[in-house]
Image (cartoon, rainbow, N blue to C red; front, side):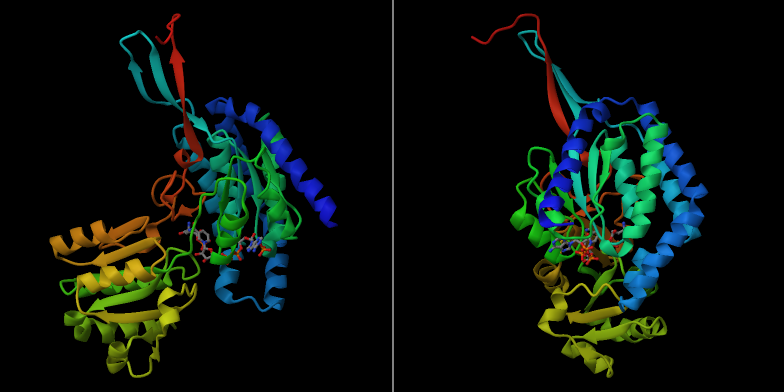
Length: 421
Ligand SMILES: NC(=O)C1=CN([C@@H]2O[C@H](COP(=O)(O)OP(=O)(O)OC[C@H]3O[C@@H](n4cnc5c(N)ncnc54)[C@H](OP(=O)(O)O)[C@@H]3O)[C@@H](O)[C@H]2O)C=CC1
Ligand SMILES: N[C@@H](CCC(=O)OP(=O)(O)O)C(=O)O
């Protein structure tokens, strides 16, 4: 497509999305749940088609030399398709947030004021090459009464096209305005720039992706943005930590799925426990092919580790790499995290109540954990059924974004002729 054509194309999708909001906002819960159940069934029935489209995306990515951890994010297999289908059902079981009364008050002059939950309207989401995200965002958007414009990662365009076809068929069968879900089919990035200018049609933009994407969107959008930042997550092992628990959490948080944003990239260890834990920890990491980087102190225990640079402490590896730092106390751990972290998910392993309380209070992040893996920062794991992303900003929402994150409020006032004097 030529530049002019892309502009016309994206504007049309956004205009149609906006037009559908009036129909979508007033859908009853049964109709929305019916859509979710139809989509769930279609995902299972279409496994063959989905896997075949996904295989061609994966093959093309392999030929372009894309790393195995990124390929893992792109991959759909039987288990992941079943998970997507189950995710649709989970969202259908959740209470419909739309129309619920957040609070109500009767004023002395007789006015009845209700604060009600309403949809945001039309949401634009730009996201990474992870096809399950297409389904998660759609299910949450429709259940919360919103229209959505989807711009997925180009590496999985074929998979996304098949998924969007299933979404459109399901909307039609459920007798919902199909224009509520729009998918930008071009992989030309200039489409994003057009999207960011559609202030009249789009109510909020949610970018999910790299620092580069977030920066580009924040600097160029005419529309309010909810940022979902990168995950440079830390695990701090306190001097009072239970060593067995610390090892279990560190291994899980680093290696269970290293390609996602809630995996840890750094381990900070209190100097008084370093001699106990460093050697077994590094041994466990090495068994799982994790490359070790470390501060000068760490290198005294782990001779073959690579010396971490200043850049390392800021970095999200997204891979089987970890950087370890020995700190002199809890205070240094907290300062380090607040300086280098990305305000996503941070954890402490400790048996000391005061240290835990201080860590949870003073670390500035969207999710802070005591004695658990950071891998739980996820809408599904938090009981939200799915997630649109993990907000690392403070306004409107923070942390995994589920149904309520896609709503705003509206004051509804009933009177019987009152006037202000
Ligand atoms: N906090 C959270 O919820 C989440 C955080 N992340 C973070 O995202 C990162 C991984 O994402 P990654 O695969 O790198 O995603 P990218 O940022 O490369 O891509 C994400 C999407 O943005 C588009 N894009 C990227 N840069 C631009 C640009 N300059 N102009 C227009 N479009 C652009 C991509 O298009 P194209 O296909 O053309 O590349 C793609 O659709 C990690 O750092 C991860 O932690 C990811 C998901 C959720
Ligand atoms: N929801 C995710 C984590 C967030 C996410 O999607 O991150 P990413 O894989 O970096 O796009 C999970 O734990 O499965």
